[in-house]
Length: 69
Image 1 (cartoon, one colour):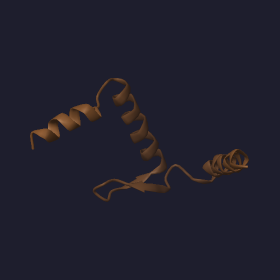
Image 2 (spheres, one colour; image 1 turned 90 degrees about the horizontal axis):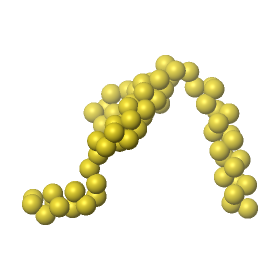
Image 3 (cartoon, helix red, strand yellow; image 1 turned 45 degrees about the horizontal axis):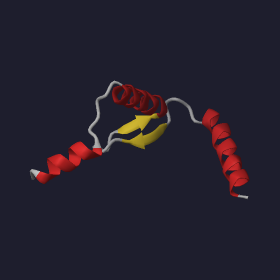
């Protein structure tokens, strides 16, 4: 069933993590700058901390702002 399939995919992905070194390029910024695995993990942790600190814009705020365009 779907749950077992997803579990298998997740387990496979977890096993693959160890094969990617910290200096392997895994993503690119919007500006096209390459991000290594360690840089990407760092960016995600910083974004998560920023969001937890309340530094984000809600959908409601965006909708209100868009009305003034």
